Image (cartoon, rainbow, N blue to C red; front, side):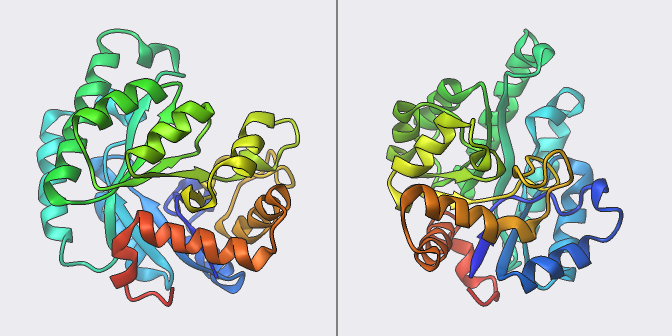
Length: 268
């Protein structure tokens, strides 16, 4: 049994075939697919999609790449959407939120300041509602950690983690889990592979970020959540563990990172 802790199942790259993509994943043993929102415009979309597929759950948030066009009213809409979703067993947290200082224009003032404002306000929502977060962390690990130390949230996942061992431990110390996926499958991704091999196994969850971050055998094609078991095979090889042990551990870790998974009604 596997969990894909980060998959944009509503993405246009799936050509309107998201249900069949989810079904293929289920056939491969992926019992849960976490579908994060990226902007106000798709809050309803991810919720509806999670209801339509047999193995979907969702999160609500505003992605840093969509912050430039976001308005403060979107934060109010997010709070309203969260309040309305709390009774939904398929709603599992706040995401995708975070900071992106890889895109040049986003790391310059005033967009950097706007990103940090939206991030901190969404952390406050996670804190106030007692919900975990799905974090976008790109060239921004230390600033993300600064905000997490100031605004304590009840755990979550640093998605597509690609930092140092020291930064990894800092996230773990704050109660976060670390997401590994397609990037780990490339032999030249030495740092990510070392992290995956040497970090404590209870800190690690698996993800695809589909349709992005395709594994080595799919690159540069479209990624899909049915690739999770094969990504898990890579993690098992790196750690020298039986595949079933990795499947059980990473699924248990996903439930620990996202406690509402346990009450989602999915057979986990």
